[in-house]
Length: 276
Image (cartoon, rainbow, N blue to C red; front, side, top):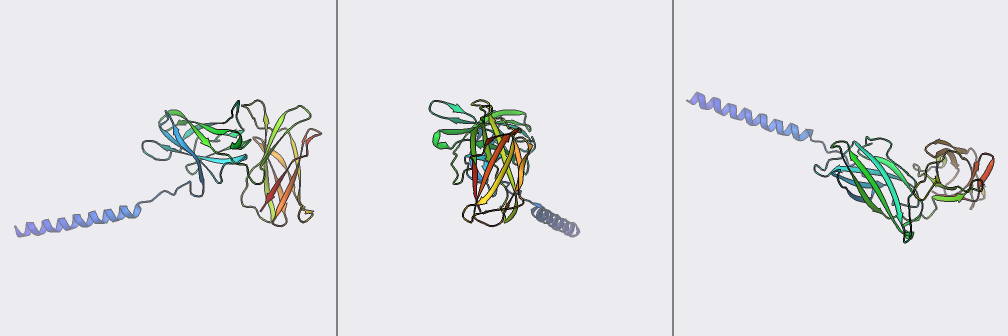
């Protein structure tokens, strides 16, 4: 009997040691997923009814008149886990007292999230001073094959320095919207310069335009000089025109824009002020 009790105690101790070791090992293996929205501002939040999916819209800055890079986060309403496979479409709309209109946008290019977020953009063509902006986000959650739509309110401000202008072409009376795409941190030296161009087809349709030729001249009015080694933007894809601007010092720069269609200059009256 003593021998049996001794064996029983030994087994108990071994089991407890194994259990403690296992718990300790599991605790050490616990990993917390990083929050993909750190450093972003939440612009709007709601639910896509029917898709069992929460929709959150983020950006690096508050929404402004011009080209806004947006990031959509989807979470499962039941599990609260991020949804990383989804088809998403957008419909921005400005509701005014007597009319409504849309705005140019770029839906997520892929049904797979990038770091749990779906990049997209909206080019708000006016601020919320003239009415109320909503962003319709249609979602097909590929995890559960359910679809729904969220309608989110977004406040849009006018930036201190304009980031978009519009003009009517004297050639065909078409109305164009030109936006300055926010870039990475600006430095003294060569920087990427990216513009986006949309053509108004109707109150609800603003397709990207690739038919224009764009040139620009940077000057620093306070110092009375420009800069060398700039590269005019050329069309790359989806209405985006990319070039290079050389800032030789910090301060406020004026980027005078000239736009041509074929051999005809259709606008040279607009510019962007840029301070860094």
